[in-house]
Length: 293
Image (cartoon, one colour):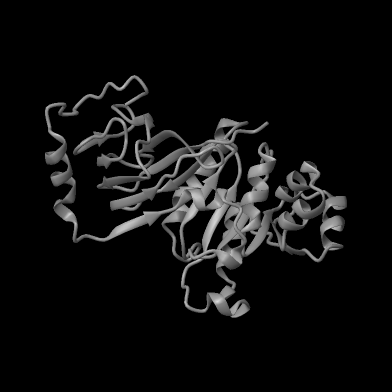
């Protein structure tokens, strides 16, 4: 499906009441909740009621400085993936913004980290961790580092929480093979509890991307100038799926989707909550309202 509203396989004669009834048949099933907009609020971690989260800054150009600061301001800790530290230093943050985004750790094989950047952050107390493993990416190395920390022992307010979410700051621009690699590692890591105990969100300059669970998903989608914009996509990245949606301009029921046939892009949010039921794990993408300046 694209933005013209056309949709093969959509039963336009199905009344709204029947649609809602169809989607509520499995009300007793587990519903996975997603809150992508939480990373856009800039709320200090002390006042957040959701799972704590860590930030990973990848070695990609940082195009949205305001977004970077808001995401980092609520993070439990921040990790730069090797050359991600160069990218952060290149932004040239000052004052409070610099303090909020200062990494706790720089992790990777360190083949990209510039010596002067390493010296700069080491002087501010950042730990430098070299992992020479050539069979994993710097992104995976950072996830392994984070997963090995018992963050609950460091803050009494977190003692009852079991999961740590991950906000990954990176882009999909530049080389196409690197973009596909990022999506591959996001897909793989999202299914590996040894790498991530919570949810992983990839935050680009203009979108947030995450991997929906099989079954029912409830995504909180508040629209606003510094929150989310209306455009979304549902992408069957690994294998064919069948989806049912509610809360979009062009909702579907038992709609087959796969590459080479039909996928849902440029659909529009029409409520504060979007629900997606899917037979396989699929990517959900949502547009950010505030674009790079």
